[in-house]
Length: 294
Image (cartoon, rainbow, N blue to C red):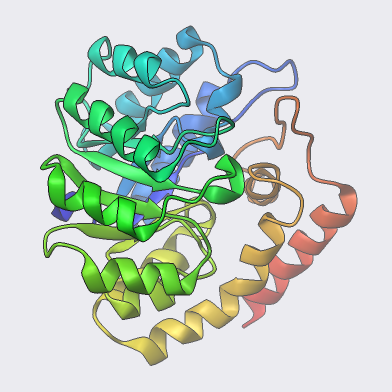
């Protein structure tokens, strides 16, 4: 699926000081990404703080992004959860005509078996009229979806077309890439590993840092996809310190601190998250300055 090759970005949800969604800042981030090389947008993901958003807010955010994007880039929407029936109901009652795919996170908190994960995604895919991207992020869900389960889903279910793998496990990436069906995409969800994943045969990234370092990160991805590892690694070396910093406390507080430094949005987050500490903000400012000097 060509629309999912390259650099997708997991958009943040900017907030105002009063906690309301800052739609003007969101439009500014969308435009900045389109102008500088992002390949597609991911909406209502973890980085968007979707767990803290009301249905009304989610609908308004989709409208803002869609209006700003104006059909220029493909869009993916995040719909997932740990209640299979509720996810199926949401899929059946959501207008998905604006989107090329659904990104669906593995169930969290209730820690299903591998068979439970398989049956969950089988039900999700059956209810979804557009392609599905599996999302494995065991650092958040407390349950790793093993490659054997991901590959079983990839082989058995036609509209499961990709996986966003974010286990930060190089061996797991290699196994998925080595054994996957030819038309199944392995997309990195780990900004710090993405270049190695692409050089091994991955299809790109759904990135957090990409929405801020759009030009550099997208260029690195494209160089990697072309097999120009030396040029890509030069960029990777320059951006890696900032990548490490944005995840030092929590996501998306780190990336919002970067976007705030770039004057794209304020750095407010919703509880239970808190804004980045002044210590981290200082580190981020220094890292950006150092990066610009190279």
